[in-house]
Length: 179
Image 1: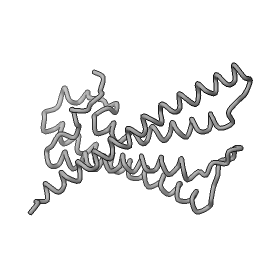
Image 2 (image 1 turned 90 degrees about the horizontal axis):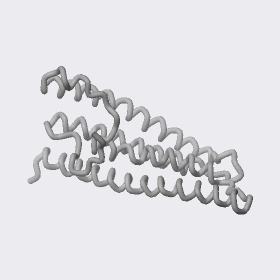
Image 3 (image 1 turned 180 degrees about the vertical axis):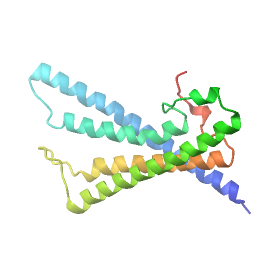
Image 4 (image 1 turned 120 degrees about the vertical axis):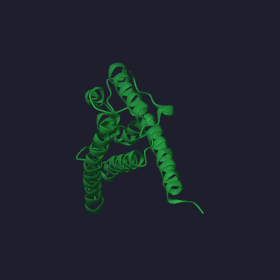
């Protein structure tokens, strides 16, 4: 029989794997932005032609990449943070401050995820499209951004759980943090 702590760890591992997969997709989306913009520049320079979708889709892709990469970035400790207090507080005090800040982060990311999901839902129900020639159904970019925000909120909750059970909230094995 699997104990509660083992079940929690299993769920956290699945969340980490999902975050890694979605971050990989975000990386591909980021590369696609460069491909589209470079193609647009070449088409304008060489053929005096413009892709009508290039800037619109690049903007969607930027939002999608940013939100879909956020959960993995949190897990690997890549977000910018101020560590001034770490030099003046005890280890126990730092741990308590980290918990309080993470609770605040859970609340903020949860509200953000909920709001973005409701925005996407309203776009789906109303059939909203972009006001451009491409008339992109807004549920597509908004839904993917909401997915990333929801994953960030779950990863923030996972961070809180890890802090409570006294496990490292960051996965140093896959960190890309610059010192």
